[in-house]
Image 1 (spheres, rainbow, N blue to C red):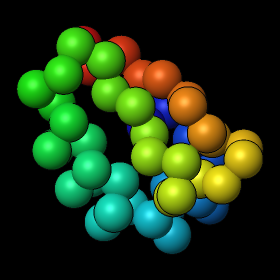
Image 2 (image 1 turned 90 degrees about the horizontal axis):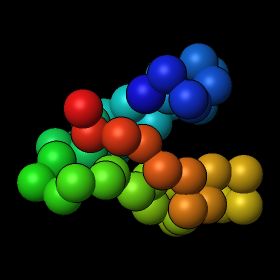
Image 3 (image 1 turned 120 degrees about the horizontal axis):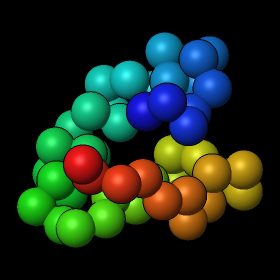
Image 4 (image 1 turned 180 degrees about the horizontal axis):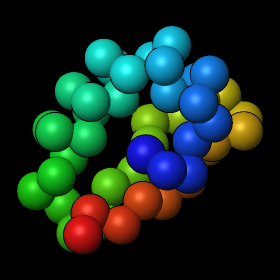
Length: 48
């Protein structure tokens, strides 16, 4: 979450939390491009 801007993370927090909780089983968590068109497309977060 620290890689996202505060405004974006506040606006989309419920969606991001659900998406990350669903993807935590993966070694790497990928932010879904539809939530972050262009800017955060294929942004990678470490699930550690």
